[in-house]
Image (cartoon, rainbow, N blue to C red; front, side, top):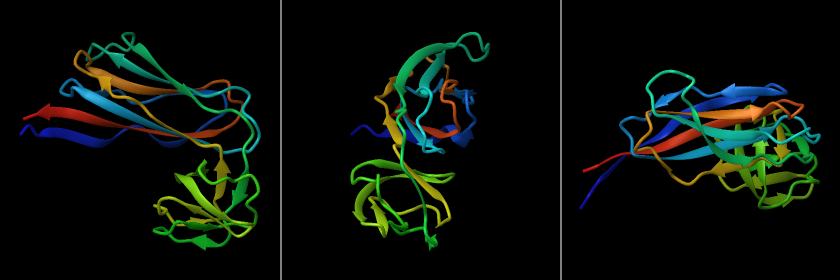
Length: 194
């Protein structure tokens, strides 16, 4: 039986705040020994008002091991841009739990994605009116005074064929957003079959 060798958690963009109207170029990653990849992108809001324009993401591949003028674009989905709901976490919520205490829950709906500022993303499982928001997975980080924003985006892309690719990078084009946002991106690769 064939065994697939894989690498997970390769960072294309570390979690960061992207300043208003900024384009962030991820670090180029050598994929010359990989044959396929799947890319995941997290996008979160840091202000509740509507974006001026969507954030656009693109995957760029190069068939050369150097020369930055040799990037070719694979277009990716764009973010949402409507206004979102923001609510501060009440007290301290420990890591390893999925119930987040808040003073108000208006604007949060079960099934939607949230971003907890400077920290992590989650999906709302249930709500106790003006008391708490329960997310599907436990928190990775303890939360004290963080702000939760609705309207987050999580993009998981179909595999990318890397057979003829030397390098790959992710670009977060927030040049028209009009406000600070948060982005992170990871890659999972298929390395070999033995």
